[in-house]
Picture 1 (cartoon, each protein chain N blue to C red):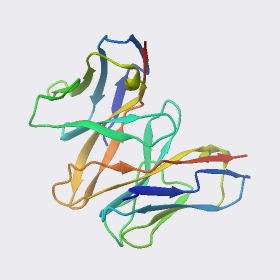
Picture 2: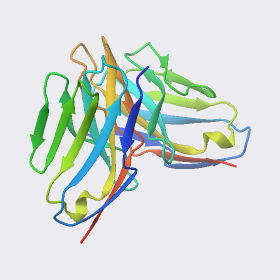
Picture 3: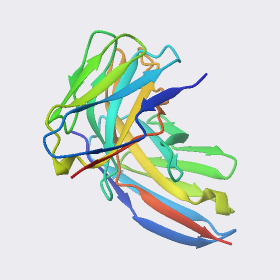
Picture 4: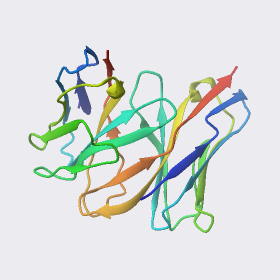
Amino acid sequence: NAGVTQTPKFQVLKTGQSMTLQCAQDMNHNSMYWYRQDPGMGLRLIYYSASEGTTDKGEVPNGYNVSRLNKREFSLRLESAAPSQTSVYFCASTRGGLAAYNEQFFGPGTRLTVL
Amino acid sequence: GENVEQHPSTLSVQEGDSAVIKCTYSDSASNYFPWYKQELGKGPQLIIDIRSNVGEKKDQRIAVTLNKTAKHFSLHITETQPEDSAVYFCAAIGMIYNQGGKLIFGQGTELSVKP
């Protein structure tokens, strides 16, 4: 069981470039999330997918798009990167369902720098 | 929407002492309060959680208390050890969807345990 995996681990972009962050989980979880972590601001939700086929905005969705490719995979795309998107990005998943007090399992993160 | 405030931002204790981290939340409908520990270079990991129908929960050296009237909850770590050094995040979940819920995180507390 690999849990939640993210690629790449590190990335440097120039302003205006695009890229996709990949996330996959092998725990048969229904719900998946993308967060960004900035110093002094905790983790902020960018987008989430409550179940396969659905996506919704979180607290800070501007400048991002997502795709729930299948039950396992949830990607985050930056169409035109900006320096304000320099951050550490975490993907997470949870079983979801009606008893939604479920632990979120986090990936190891992607450290992104936009110059 | 929900807002979670966490204090202090940094905390330094001697090995063997206790550490207390406090959080307040704004949404009186919030009913689930997890705590996550993040070690350097890794994703956050759940260490303990509490639901709104419980006032206190313990797991070995870790305890969490919840005061719903005052809308605050706290993490207590007793007999601290150097391996407790990490960043700790509190969180609250307000709306429970059919499949998964959204966590709102506090800003994080960097705990340093000095041998």
